[in-house]
Length: 305
Ligand code: ATP
Image (tube, rainbow, N blue to C red; front, side, top):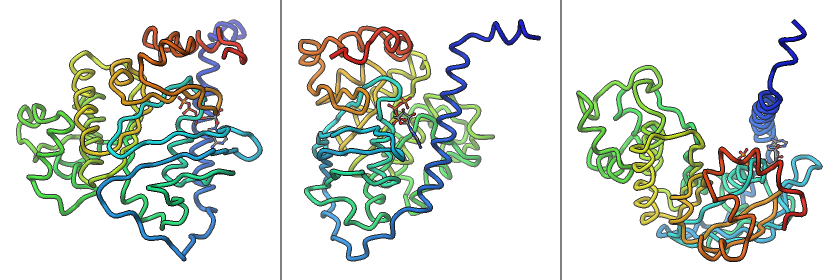
């Protein structure tokens, strides 16, 4: 029995701890969301529809006493495509949580078209943004039900439009009953890449002006990889896009890349600019850095800059 314990690879133990932390994080978010400060009912008018530019201005954030974001400043301009890259634990998901207002910055502010987003009602603000997670669920029911979940009034024309944006038009043609095809138990008949693009299409139906996308870390086959890449490219023409990027193709195409390390923005620029000025960035993107991230973490000392 002892021998069995001894041969559990250390990495598996680390992964287990990571999963546990993620789970605890989610629980923490629920608990803290329930105790969020009372809404500022004085309220500011939301910017007119037509485009949101989001600025992080010297944002600091701690989970309890532990600083996780340290003076983060960058802007997602209207209709721009910004890629966020960094090792696991750098604070990327925390940035998303602040945008969604699950948490408030400890100091500093997030501004939408110049106004602190805390001044908007949470409900109105969330109506202007959308999040596509790494594993957004596909629900039981038809493809149509799945898409209209967050936009019940959407017409078939709207559905086809977002399906095309998400590069799913071919899938719909292949399905036996098109939009009326039952996707089955949690969309099990679909590949991971298709499921994420369905989540993307669903998010687009709400006409977000800022889309937050956590690109899958899991391996995608080349067809799905290309399809996701094309979808990201198209979506970036429609609204501002902030992507937690794990793939070089997505990173390369961004208007700007924000490199986050241990809660700090350590560099920003285009792929070529960053390659020229930032050694860490070069090593991060030299291969598929998701697979290499463990070795990077081992390799890079805290003072790598
Ligand atoms: P990954 O790519 O692994 O998702 P990340 O860059 O998104 O990493 P975050 O999830 O933002 O990083 O986490 C940043 C730091 O904050 C990590 O050290 C993490 O353990 C910690 N953390 C995240 N959520 C919570 C929470 N709810 N309570 C306490 N600490 C948290």
